[in-house]
Amino acid sequence: MKRLKPAAFPLLVMQEKNKLTLTVQYADPRLTTQVPRAAIRRWIQAALFFDAELTVRFVTEKEGRTLNRSYRDKDYATNVLTFNYHEDAEQATHADIVLCSDVLMRESDEQKISLEQHAAHLIVHGVLHAQGYDHENEEEAVEMESLETDILLQLGFPDPYSIS
Figure (cartoon, rainbow, N blue to C red):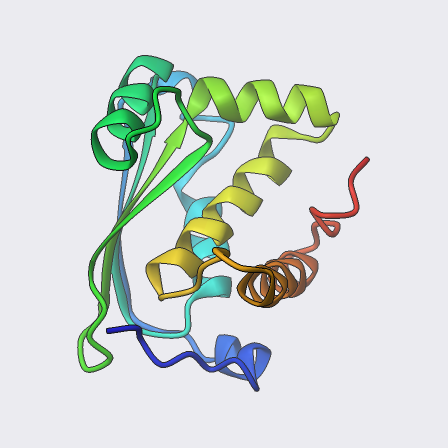
């Protein structure tokens, strides 16, 4: 069952601080100082429509590839994976958001954007997935990308989809 989404008024809802229990794990410690816990909390809070229990984990390419192959049948490391453990509107969002440090660093170099900017985008993207948003079809993709853009602009980052 998909969680009800506040699509008509997302920025109004985001202004309220929802309860957030956050664990950050640096299985790959290279980003410990570059992507600090305080920034992650701020980015998540900006994208949170509901109370949440989230774990954000930074992994190596090997672990990222293993997870993507095991859970999505795709034999490569992807930038972000979201594991949502329930979608009951009566309960807090409970999810793990896994970021592959190698892919994150490579993509930020390729796109010529800061690591912080790219990490913020992927974390916001993962938080939206954890709350039931998806991009499996054009309509869903437009809605999700619009939310990501609005949230990132609110956080002081540029539109991630206008980067050339």
